[in-house]
Length: 437
Ligand code: SAH
Ligand code: SF4
Ligand code: F3S
Image (cartoon, rainbow, N blue to C red; front, side):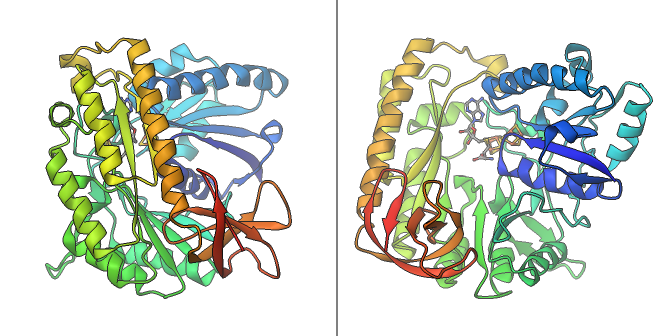
């Protein structure tokens, strides 16, 4: 057996894909945690913002030194950056021996063979049906407690700023039988939590041979019914199709977590329209109200883009207002980054000056830090069930895990172990963490 080292960048889909890659290569390679011992070095990459790509290019330059010491090591680049830049990446980055796009992983053994013979090897063909549904992912970096299950691939939404529809291709759903099989296998191995993954899980749909349609609400119910001991999470939901039937399932099943990541991107109707998000602020707030009504203790998080093309001070204020109204428990915040090939790059001007973007970003971040702290303060005194994931970074005497709301809770170890469900009472908090007994 040879040694495989994989470095994964970007979203959870990439984490799940790297596990599929490890499985595809498992006949000849075992995963190592030591890059120096690698016969094959893979980077699974992200293109979503320019700084994501710059980080990867920097890493490739560092790799040149490692390759000098170990000339037989083969270096391959996978994922979204391979798909976006295609063969030209091989000319630009001489450390690379081959590249493979997100739908080309079944051809990896062949690409590696070609590369080892010194041929220029690449496959960036996108598929309309590939879901890797028959492949059992190798969970090489797992805590043995929680795992990702990819339920669909691609995206058809074409938000004007976003590169994902180009790097991941068209949306397609995976056969539910194979999803349930994967979840059951994880349960049998002692896993306690699965996260169902897709760029937009709410548009999951499958037609059985008998004509019966399965949507995301029915899929998540089937997974939740496997065992009350299995926690079920999902990411990401597009606000345009988060249905009442899904919210009801979350409310009705104790083991479907009370946590929804619902990226709003902006609080301004004008910006939302320009982003092609196909909802406006009122619609979004109506969905938030429905969630809060049916699941009173649901935590809601979001993604925000500041400084999108033409964003005025008033648009920016609308975003701050939206944050306050929803009261997000946490948020991922980004400065707009132009992505070549998208509609925004072609038709709109990236006209918000960098210093204005930076100032608005700080305002959004400060607002969120306060909201996160306020959200955590409301939990002080409450009792939660935590699924233990590991030891706290600070001390071996402390464990950490998450509650249903996906908040991290740290508490004294006692006799508890990783993978246990533990009842804890929150005594104090920081903006990032709940501290409990
Ligand atoms: N499919 C998911 C997330 C995709 S990418 C969804 O639609 O919610 C994750 C986040 O990156 C997006 O939600 C968005 O906030 C951000 N993002 C995407 N493209 C971007 C760009 N060009 N500049 C800055 N942020 C971007
Ligand atoms: Fe990108 Fe929009 Fe698709 Fe999300 S829904 S991946 S932001 S195009
Ligand atoms: Fe990045 Fe591709 Fe995910 S661009 S965010 S790794 S889908």
